[in-house]
Image 1 (cartoon, rainbow, N blue to C red):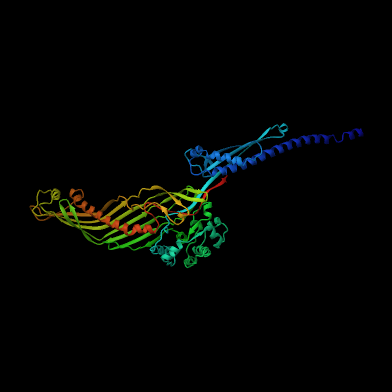
Image 2 (image 1 turned 135 degrees about the vertical axis):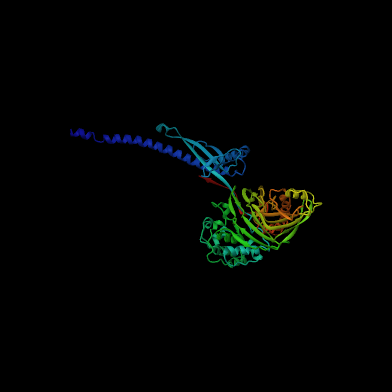
Length: 589
């Protein structure tokens, strides 16, 4: 019995070994086959990525149907696959689709007439399993996708109020800077010209400015920098360029204590920093004025009494309000920016005067006008610019295309108040239809002596011009020429058709001598035909007398002022900034 028990020892071990061998062989077969499938999947992802990047370089603003019909995308796919055909497994099958990224960054297909900004590539392949006879699975599939976009991006600015400079601008910019920085700034025209002709790049501010940042992104994230610190950092960059006069000028600007701090990103709206923003140069005068505006929390500045003298006007006062500073904008195609909004109020006082008015048969009725106050409010509307294309050649960027939509003015309001007085003697003979209307009001057929109409009124006249119609224009800005020369639309008419309305109190009476009795006085009611017959020509004459005043304001103040501010009436000025990026491609998702 003891020997039989000893003879059965090891049987279990043999059984376990046999079972384990089968399991290990089966697992090893799976591991080898799955490893092959993983290699194929990795290769499919790699080739999908490379092909997607190659195809994205052909997304150049053409519509989806135009790209498909041209065959450029399919040809590029074939060539890309030929260059990257060292893949494991079966010959890959690659397909592509054109579309756009939605707001969540997910690829979506688009209609044939839309312009694609992304391409999706799908790579499919497979591999035969070596141990299919063991595992029962003969083949493994590999399917991978990649999405790439092509960003043509550039930096540009529109309608900056320092876009045009001349010797008279110091009179405008000094009070602006004084108001915003809260301290004394007294720069002459030469100083402004010097600052306007100097530029510093964001990279230089990072490397030389001493602001404690290591990248452009970190620079744009600075949100608590004083204007003085920014001026000193800019001066350090100018020192490195050998522009010592401009650097010392910046150091001489004293920023008052308590001036709010600023965020660098407000000087350059770059969003998620595109490549074009990395080497962008900022105009130094833009930096100074932009920092001043941004530091002023209301983004508005009032410049009182610019000073203007008009013929026939006793006195004028002016108030200019600049609502916001338009920072340079960086972004891909479709990026938009808009100009600053400017509001101008001009108050003109016209001395008392006499005016001859023709009323029916009376050719020269003398009307006395009290001193008249005319107030003109002009709101320069916003011009919008959209980056539509960056054109490149073999050596780099060639031009930037901007679409413009702008209006001359947002609105024009003219108001005037005055007193009107007239004593009109209506002759019994030769007075035309006026005498007939007068007798009709009195219910008389005849009078013994000429009647007299007395008019006393306090009138308020308002006139409005509708906003000028917007228009779309495409401007192609050559680079580098467009870095310093503005491109845009021409000037247009400031005011459109003016519609006026007059309100106020009017007292009109008739003094007459009837056939019997003493002199009588009769009030003329607004419902009487005589009321409008007498009043309307006077009101028309008053309204027409405002037109020369408005014309003088336009010629003497509004036109030159908007030119000073760099705002082209009826359009906009656009500058390109160094240096546009030519179709940078990248993988997303």
